[in-house]
Amino acid sequence: MTPGPTRPAGPRVPCIIVHGGAGADPGEGREELRDGIRAAVVAGFAVLERGGRSLEAVEQAVRVLEDHPRFNAGRGSVLTEAGTIEMDASIMEGDRLDCGAVAAVADVANPITLARGVLESRRHVLLVGDGASAFARRLGMPACAPEQLITDRRRAQHAEWMRKQAVPAGGGTVGAVALDRHGTIAAATSTGGMVGKLPGRVGDSAVIGAGTYADSTIGGVSCTGDGEATIRVVLARRALEYLKEADDPHYAAHVAIDLLVDEGRGSGGLILLDWRGRLGYAQSTPLMPVGWMTPARGGPEVPF
Ligand code: GLY
Image 1 (spheres, rainbow, N blue to C red):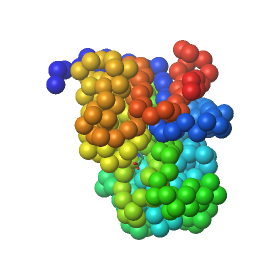
Image 2: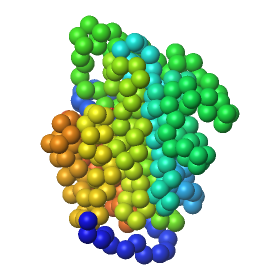
Image 3: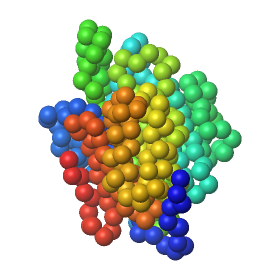
Image 4: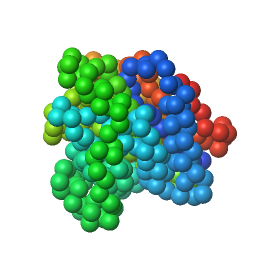
């Protein structure tokens, strides 16, 4: 790989970009998706504006979408073949490559906060299932009954899946990437996974390097889409390699999605932010809700 541009010292203009999952265009209800993305961008940017860390900004942005029932994360997560909920999440800070992830957790309202707890513990990177739940209790996170996270919409979708063994590619995984004033980049991703997945299946959103990656000397990435395909090509890390080579976020995002389709044999999307605060995004699906905010451009932009 050719060396990328060197990152000069000094304060940065903070910036955040958020996605709400690549998938089919639902046709109706876009305003609800826009409201959710806008609220997440505003929550994350508020952290950056007051001088807070990008790690906190991406966690707060993702929590807003985990709490929003229209997205496939936290409340509103899709159901497994067994009709249960199993959520994955990961978070990374790009200065020291600190990262944390959880997989197949059923009883926390905000898996991204649990993933951050794993990161802050600096003992492990990935906790799964009952072990992740036990760690949540150790951190003082209250247990949340899985029924509280399951919406009527997801019950109906599960019933349709059981009848047909297929439903339209739903999307709804959520993610955020932010750059703070100190030049630190963080990225976060959270999901309920795929409709009708086998219990125990873990997707890319829990896999550092596949669904999420951040390196403050290059940039940060959060992915969405077919988890198996994304893992196959280690998409988030590969997108940063393209970014380092080309120094062009828009180009890097598009080349990475070509890789996902051609070599990964799947579909999806990603958002990306480079160390200068330039953003890029791309998807191979009909829709990927995105939004972003920088001081230079005023209020949040939600161009979908
Ligand atoms: N990209 C989300 C999943 O496949 O689980």
